[in-house]
Length: 282
Image (cartoon, rainbow, N blue to C red):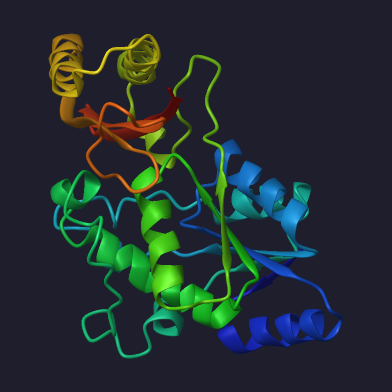
């Protein structure tokens, strides 16, 4: 695996691959890689001959008071892990590569739909930062496919919409959420949990699974299910932001005849902001 820092060096490799008729997959990350990220690389390998993984902690998607300056950097460990899963290139750009006119003067890409609810409500401007940096990575790499984790359900829907709206010739593939043996969704921010909080954290997914079973057995009072879940999280010691049942395809409000729903949740547990979701077929 080769490590490159500039768009020019990356494009030399990309041009060689394209001239050889090879397809290119992109896995965009902020580093501090765990097995969930590595599963995305493995999925990428199934869809393309070449895999580019980017590591860039994007300042424009962090709000005031969030953990941008504290976000863990484990680049040497990331390199070893990516080598084991046979990534072809690790792209580690500097800020001036991604934002040549500075973050404050950068052209912004905004997807109006899907950004005002859920994580968009509690992290204002976050998704504008995500779509802005992802569009820049798409412009530099010009991948045939890009892999995004289903754990960030709202995000991957936004990126799909952006790609369609801008007519970008990129296939977006969702990678299945990877979990610890006790059900906790893998996340770089799980390391913020204390031992006591870590023992409690899987209750979030347990509650989503309970809601899913209720939906599968015919419960259709969505608001009551959501309210009960919020109360249960609070009683357990979480600080929930939202628990919501929506249509899986577009996050619209559900109706009784929907055949595929997603149950989404976000909650703080100590310093860690946990997000999770499950898709329910009914």
